[in-house]
Image (cartoon, rainbow, N blue to C red; front, side):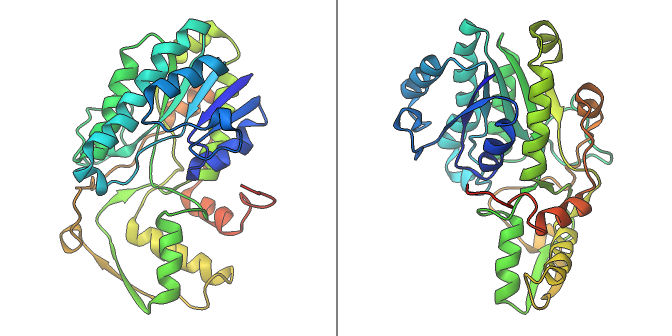
Length: 306
């Protein structure tokens, strides 16, 4: 299977390069790809179309995304371009060679008023530009004929790049106390698990075109369980002390969303039900806390040069 990975330099993209290599030949595209033929600025639609036509992959895995939730409020044009227009561009051309697309979306497509884990068919209602841009991308794909999977995920983290885990580790080393929001509920999901699960899904989905068409659509893919940002931070510091990444944990103080205002509104509840991805693709999501322990042990990054 020939796979074109977009967004290979991002947090998830780095892990996808390794996991997808187990199921096919991966061509990793990014703004600074070593192979000049794979370098692409995703604002350049013409360049993207040329890349797609030149590569003609069996599967495009789109890990490119605008993920700056607060910045999106004042930069809606770029958020919409990357998160909504880009997947539509991909879907518009891959049908000419029977290609397929896996695209990632977010828990932020929901308004957060739920009281149970959201299923794929629940009504959406994003609170900010970021969520709206991702929802627009989902809608665009649903209206096109290309075989596609939309994997909604949440609270993605790893030991690489800028994310909640690395921010907490940095601040925990710098400060004696931290205040973290304790009334937003979700499921921390490691980029390592997400990449491995995506490869397993892709391998099963791509085996036969007829079943591929029938299985196209939206799936929720996160770890299992739920916590708050405060609960996540507390678990991070406990693991950091146990693994020697921090000498001591800072004092961790809870606050509500009103006490920590941000440009973009976040859903108070964004836990996703993963029953469908378990049933169709045989994925068993790990408990978020045990998965954090795996991440903090360095298991996903061992031997990695990316």
